Length: 157
Length: 254
Image 1 (cartoon, chains in turn brown, cyan):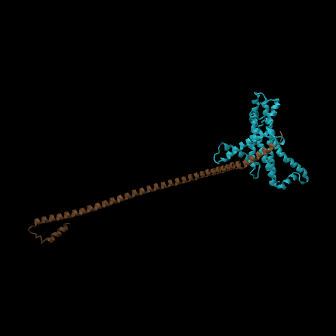
Image 2: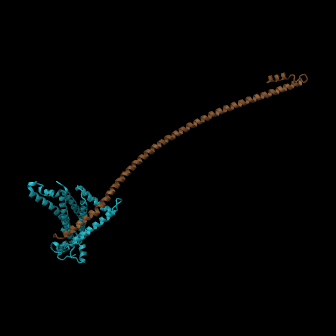
Image 3: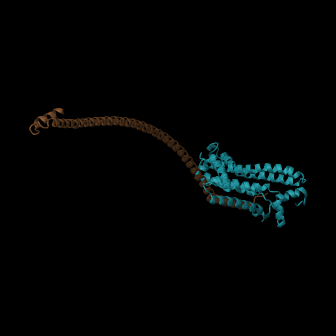
């Protein structure tokens, strides 16, 4: 139970242990702890930032979607309008074309009628001439009455 | 079990250290050996962890070491407000070393002495904290540190002033000096004796239990060992906390 030199030996051991702990044990462990602390806080901050970014992106996506919907609706209505317009236009065109065709047909008919009339007149006049010729063979000098004959033919037309 | 001299002989035998030398120059080889061995274990464990310390996911060993380090660091930060590179590592060393010393108490009282007996050593006292030299080595080292930091922080004059002029002012100088000296000396003595007394008594009870009939031994030994787990940790903790408190007092300038 006596105090003796063991005390000194123990103090030396203690000093060595403390020195060793101070120099080689404490700093690396504390450094690792600190580093982990910063890592974790950085990670948390990054996670928070990520979440915020997601929210932002969602918002953006929603607005984009909205815009796209509006745009598509616009396009559809424009297309419908255009289609209606086209239908109207083609209707108009068809009507015009029909009128034009009708007009042309009428003109042709008229012309043909004129032609027929002309040829008919010519035929009638030649027929009348021939008949007159037959009848008046002897009495009429063709050369002499040419004037009268052509005047008559003109009047027939 | 050496039972020569009956129960008293058995008890005395268990509490006698293995020593060499005479008078003051006696060395308690068992105390020196086991404290060095346990100190080596402590250093080995913490050094291995410190070398492989990562800030990533810690392994089991690193977890244990980090828990201890953070526990000690919290204690230091709670009571010590200066900055000192020494106090926290010192506290960790004290806590772990004293804890390991004390935990030798939980080994069966006859196990290591019997092995030592087979190796030809007559005496073997395995718990370094049941040796006054062990506990006083710690408390006197702490006392020196208190002394050192008091002078370093307050200056020689400031320290002298504190020793002579508090608590009753310069007129009561001799009385103040006496009071402060007793106060300062009481610190290492109470530190060392508290640890020693607790562990010595604990070990004594274990030895007494070992003297009971074998049927009764587990009945008493088990609860006492369980209770002792608390005592072991608590005494290590008290020693560490008081060290921190004393050193922070030494840092305080009045």
